[in-house]
Length: 165
Image 1 (tube, rainbow, N blue to C red):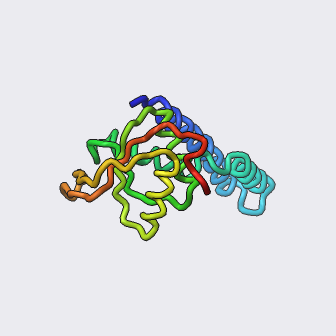
Image 2: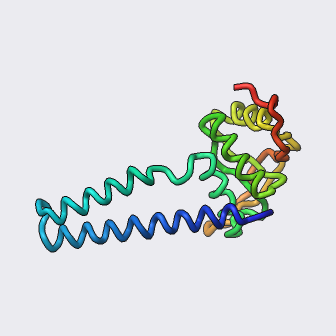
């Protein structure tokens, strides 16, 4: 597994949070010092608004699912790469798999129990994944260890004709 993409995502997120928090602190300072109707407070609100507009979405849902799965693996919650949430649509699946392919992740286990599971399976297969087998995986948490049912998928390279939306 090549973790560089995930470390880059974390660094970029940390940078975003640091900048946003600095603006929020300046805004709170202006509010506390000059009051809510002051020019300083208005200016601070405008800076925060501009920052949000320019940086509206760092990562889309599919990329975030990949990052959260990596983070759970890295933090020992799972001993393998596990996705325990559902994809909303095919674009989430594509973006998720793009990250996995870049990170050279060969297999993952899908454990979500959502009503959209069948659609998720078809989207994963449509984007080049192969359903390997049903499996079980242990989830380690502060509340104990829990066995989860899952489906193991192998990530293959996407061929242009693989997915018809």
